[in-house]
Image 1: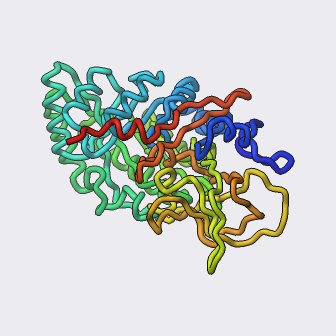
Image 2: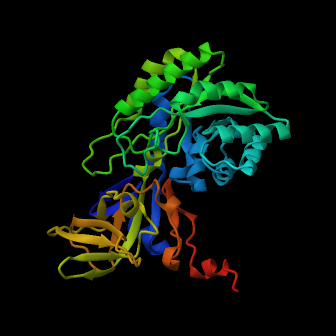
Length: 414
């Protein structure tokens, strides 16, 4: 299941990566459907016995095939734009299993979501609340609302993906919670039903989750005492994966479920979970071909994949394991693995120790199923990278390559 070597050749769910490369060209993303199923079911099974709904965080990987696969397993969706909402609906996620998060929802996006009948808006500010009230009232509808509360918790993750500190742009400040809920109760078109938090991404310890869950429990009791009907607790996502970067094994869905059951289980609320990376991250790889091997003060492997295809290393200084698709043995040597983009930051790894890899051979950049293709661009007028899903012994193209001709055709000449 997932990516494994067979007789020195890398496979995905038993399907040859070399065969996919010969058919589709490089670079491309490859996803294991079985690995996605396994990771989703870990949440579903361990939260069994609780009134819980897994709402997959679409921003992690928004390919229709991936969302549709998860929808078929019973997943809902956490979306952060009208476009993601449209993707989720078209992939088969029922509207009543969709949560709309994000700090800048427009009136048009609110209207679209209300007309579809989504389960919940996670409101992040008082101005947003006022606008949502106006749009819902205009439509003669009622918006089901949870407020995203900023609990000022430092989750200890990368500064660019922390979301739960008071200096972050997300959520209602802790000291404004009672006033905001009271204001919402007086507004037309608003039905308050829950509390939401999300304290960061790629969390590798349970302690921040415990803090956040205890905030949920405290707030639920307080807000109920203040007269609000709190029936939903959206505990967000953020559970990390093992990028083999020395940060150690992250907690598991079983660990998270046990913690939620212990702290939140007695409150009688529906629990919403919003995992993304931990569902799809380890299920994907970016496969690339070596264009040149450049010798000098540093040995460079220059790939045909670049930072426009996978931006995590340059944006977050993220580590991704790199593996030759064909490994015939030989002495491993250090090299810098770089791409073709005209930026020094277009570097996947420095001092990466690899077995011999020659010009024209394939490498796989692993654990790239989350925040990979979904963040890809056409910088340098490079083709938009395609995606392949391996399922049931079939490797299916689920996003085609978009080349320069199509990109240039979008321009309107002066």
